[in-house]
Length: 249
Image (cartoon, rainbow, N blue to C red; front, side, top):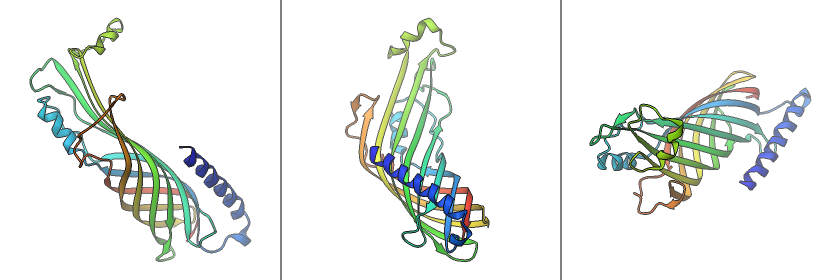
């Protein structure tokens, strides 16, 4: 985390310097991009083994609705050292939920499951100019992230009285199963960008995330062992976005 903070500060300083340089028209030549934007990302997480495990325990849960949709904020700027290369910072977060359902073997319990995903990344993009408005932008992103897979169940949960809050620690009253996956990742994306104007760019593309150095915990205390090898944060993803700033394609 400390290393990423230092790199983020450097990128922000470069971003600020580029804002100043673009005020001078004499320096405003060649490929250049400096902007901030919103990207929506659909991640197809391989969590079917988790859903099946809940079903096998006769909980009768409805499946989590996939893919998970993430809201991302991204800052990007060219750096000038290598032509057509730019760097960026981004943060994404999102979740996917199941419908509320009853236990298959006990209708006095109601339950809900969820998948939560969050990542912070630093990306390196090389811009390949196709036309005056279209750019092909292969991107390598490095970062860290977390994935939470949770199932919550409550008995007779029409309402909860303040004075009964302590009773939620009773396993017969409520159930909380939370799997936490913390990881580092490398992600490759192939994006297409279209410059609507010199101040607005649209993006769409696809990518693959490979997680590394994974740790898995159960309910924040216990190490999770013997999980299926297919259960991971590795995922194929689709994205679209809009950016505002200064773009000289």
